[in-house]
Amino acid sequence: MDTPDAVCATTLADQVADQVRRSTHGRIRNLTVREDAGRVLVTGEVRTWHTKQLALQGALELLSGDRFREQITVVRAVLAPR
Image (cartoon, rainbow, N blue to C red; front, top):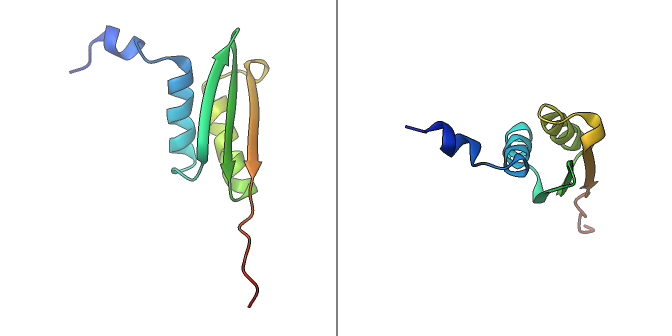
């Protein structure tokens, strides 16, 4: 059973990272979340704009817009010529 102290030991950055992973169903690569001076920066790579939107929505469930910055890149898969 979790104690209140154990639950509070998780940092805001960890909480945001967990929420982004859940909201994107794990479809974000190289995810990093850093907190600095009350602002949170989320970086990573996704394959679709839809997944980026899911990541942004997940982060904003925990943060206000003025505390949130993102550098999530949409990386298209490169197909080999046939």
